[in-house]
Image 1: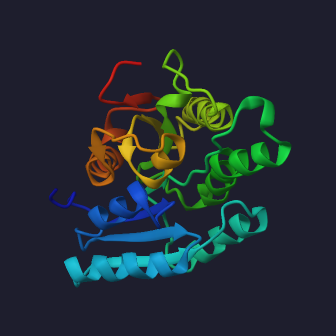
Image 2 (image 1 turned 90 degrees about the vertical axis):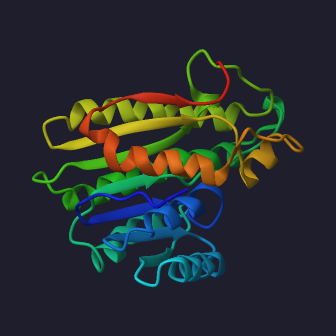
Image 3 (image 1 turned 30 degrees about the horizontal axis):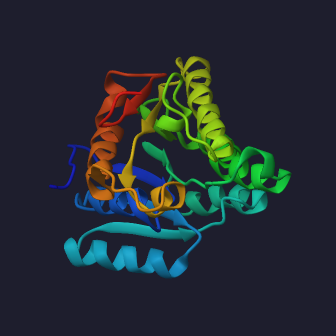
Length: 245
């Protein structure tokens, strides 16, 4: 897929960038040398490999790798100050990082719930709060929260995924609430409820299942949406799936 391009320079942040959709998303954004991308993930080795691949594909790529454990509240709080060392403003934030537990409801522990909700919901809240001062009201910002069809109202649900799916439903509702609260601040909030794409997380949820889309294909849609959809949409939770709910 060709790099996604716009006329103006963009400061972009992508969480969950060390694998799957986030990894491919950073590579697509980096195809346009005017973009500066901060790639956030825990795994420093994979982040280094990602940056190397971006530079190999486009020697003028501007990719900054920041390691952060989004399950650590203190680390998330310090992430914003680290971002401010590189950016004075943010035009696109893609909250893509996610954690999953595939376990019968009767066996889910409080620790399981805390881990999933901390990464999938609480870190999203914290990062958005801390980056609000960097969202310039003179230049429309787009916050894209990655949800799941598992958290989309009326969609098919699957045994063992109650923690994950309910956390993604929370992300979708949060998106709608923030769109209303910040509609006069020139910040758009939208959520993409993703269907199956071939990623490591999909393998955890459905071992052996073959998805109709690759991580790169799904990333292509998200990249285009992130750069353009806020001109037309705000507060939307959009299913992105090859099948009916």
